[in-house]
Structure formats: C-alpha cells, structure tokens
Length: 570
Image (cartoon, rainbow, N blue to C red; front, top):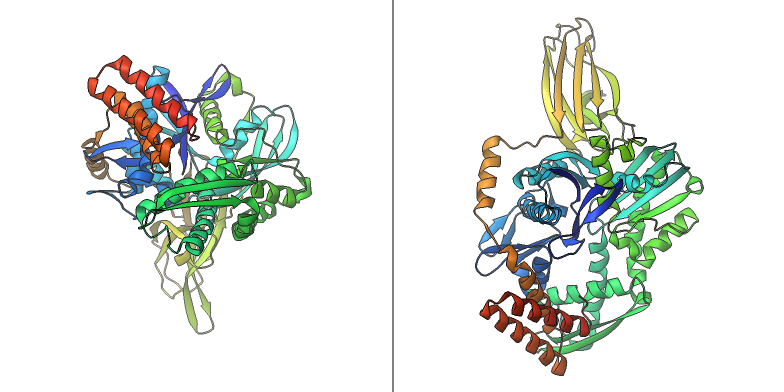
C-alpha cells in the first residue's frame, strides 16, 4: 500500500511519490511522466485515455474530450459519439488510468492520494473533484491548492533560508498567484488570487486565430469551419507555440486543408502574435496585483518569482513577470512537475514522514465567506446583500464573528444563508448552505440580535455557529468540503455507469498510441515522406495481425523511429 500525489491538470496530469526523502514523478505505463488529460471513445465503444486519446483529438475530434477540467462543477455534458459524459465522469476515467498506471509501475496498491486544484476553484468545482475521485475509487486524503503545492516543492529545498516569494502558476486552463514567506522551515501562504478561465489554452486560441486569419487572406477559406481541419490546425499551432518558447519563429505546414485540399504553409513569428497576447497578459496582472495587495507586499519586497505550469515557458509570460517585479523569474522547479512534486510533499507531511518533520505550512482562505442580509434604506428593505464574516486572505485555521439584528417587529426566526465570493450581492456569489435560527424572542425590529461565528480549518471544514444574544440559545451548521453532495445512491449509479464502459485493452495501449501518433503525422505529410511513414504503418499493422509479440515490438519501434525521423519527436 502506498500514498501518492496527483496533479489533475487541464492539459496534462501527473502522479508523484515521496521516495528516499525526495518527491519524484511516477511515469505512466508508456514511460512518460506527463499523461495528457484527454478521453476518447473508439469505433468499438472502448474508452481510451492519455496520449492515445490526445492523438485522436486530431483524427476523431467528435469522439474526444480535452480541457474538461475547466467545466468541473458545471452542468455541461460532453457528447462522444452516442455517449454523454459530465466533466466529473471524464475526470474519473482519467484518474482511474493514472491510478492503474501508477500501481503497475510501482508494484503496489495506491491507498490514498493528495489531489491538487487551482487556488481559485470555487466550491462546486472542488466538490466535483471529490466526486471524480470517488467515482475512480480513489481515496482522497486532501485537496490542496496548486500554487500551495508548488510552494511546498520549492520550500523543501529552502528550509534554511528566509525569503518572500510569489508563485505564478499558469497551467493549461487556469492561472493562480500565491504570495508566500519562508522562515525557519515554516512556509506561510500570505495571499492567493487567480483566474479559473485563463491559461495556456487561451494563448493557443490567439495563435490559432492569427494563423486562421492568414489562411483566409491567402487561400480564401477558413480552416476553423470543418471540425477535422480545426483540430489539425490547433495541433499544428500547439507545436508551433512550444517551438516559440525557444525560437523566434516556427513553420506551420498543413497539407490538403479545406474542401479543395490546399497545401498551406505559414511562418509564425513571435513578433506577430505577442501584440495579440497583450489582453491576456493584462488579465494576468489583475490577480497578481490583488495577491500583492492582500498580502500588503510591494513587488520590490519579493525575493523570488517562481514560474510554474507549462504555459510559463512562453517568453511573454516571463517578460511580464520581470517587468512587474523588476527581477528575472526563477525556474528552480520544472514548470510541468512542480505542482505534482508538491502534492507528494503534502502527503509526506500528512503521513508524518521524517524527511519533512521540520516543515510547517499554513494556507489562507482564497475566497471571502459571509451570509445574506437585508438592510433598510429609506422606506425600503433591500435584501440579498452580502455581509462578509471571514475575509479572503485570512490565515487558516481561523474563527471570525459578527452580530446581526432582526428586521421586523415580532420576528421569531432568521434564515442564515452562507455564501462565498467577493461580490456585494449574494446572487453573484456561490451559495454554500442554509439553515434557520428559531426561537428568537418576539420584540420590536432591531431589538434582538444574534452572533454568527465562522470557524474554518485547513481541511475545508466550515462550522457556522449562531447564538441568540438575549437567551444564549445556540444553533450550528457544518459545511464539509471534504465530502461531496451526491447521495450514496447517486454515487453508486454513476460508478455502475462508468464500470459498464470497456477500456481499451491495456496491453494494446502502446500500439494504439503509436498508430494514433502516426495518423496525425500522416495527415500533415505529403509526397515521399508520407509514403515512407505509410509503409512503416502498414508493416506495423501486418505485425499486429500476426499477433507475435516480438514482431509487434520491433515494428512498433521502427514506426516510432520513422515518426522521430520525420520531425514529430518520440
């Protein structure tokens, strides 16, 4: 039995473990540390996840789901052929794969996990993550914020230092900012802010739009109209985006595109798209400034700027960080792995691992918590106003209290409606729960008062206690974020539905992945190069028909070598 950390990402997901006092990434069964966060259904109705599914996003976009993390906690459904999935169900399928792969690689059963989420994930999204883990039959020890996890990974090697740092975590779909201080092994999270709809996918959208506009100008058609062309365009632009992390320009070649099967070739220069990134960079500055303000810290007081998340490799992101903080950002941690490594450190802390026995971490409330109130303004009563009780940025665990009075003559009951958010009106915030305080002595409006106390701990447990001041009568409600809101019957039904799905055979996964990658490249090549690749694909298919393990392995390696030779990488 073992315990792991899981970074459930928008674009890629990772599993980590604490070994010999250090966190490390657990590769999947393909030997890769990053597993694409993708789910696909093939023509036989079998489910594929990871790299094989990601490749099918190009060849079979109508049967593949990606970036579903962005919709966690919403009512959106993903239609893959004849089947329909919620974001939680898709995440559960991915989590089940991560769990099985890690168990096979480690040779041990996974007992429990720490799973990371964006710091600015709301209550519904956090609960949806819990649901996904339960559907995957994965016991969750704790859900922690991604930048907090990255801070743990960083702090593990900085315990003897005293410094203040800021973590900029730009993943595939979300952006988080965390200000922290390290002192004598104590990692104090001072403030967090973020944007759950801003990530590398949005920068990719800009590149796709720029390239598509050039295609319209030069070739007279929009490659975004056809689902197949749109998927190929996005895949090519994603590779170009990665190339622009190190080069000033990237060549995009898309043969046989559009209804007339035109060959398209466009050079994408960094200078071309960086001006179009400005609105996204401006959005990044808002949570950065909010986090600094909440922590009462000036940018000049920051000793280290940590870039986390694959999207931070873009030069414009590093330039923004340098401009705002007046210093070059640090890459002390691998951007793609930092969050997962920190999840393993958190699991070690929870388990009392001696490697981290001198470490302590504190976190803060990412959102303000309060209740709905009414207020008399002139001759009118205005309801639905948000009254904060525990402000965002409050160090956890914490307890805060406020008093409220009755609004009407003879009022005997008060409804306590709990919300989280930063808006002045409750309708714009997220409702967490409600209960009634009864038995208030009848009297004139405003005479009777109740005190409302919020107690909030590191595990996401919010206790709401009320006391009628004149009588001392108390009432309470507990909102446990560590539990989901589904009934046992609903969970059982969802598990039954997912168990009815047939996963693609695991021993065939390397073969399916190789063919899927080859199909993507085949669609982009022309002439002799396409013939060379097609010949390797046909030899591989012939080996599969023979069902000889040695011949299949040899043919697969030859196919992967051809893919590498033709510039697609292995």
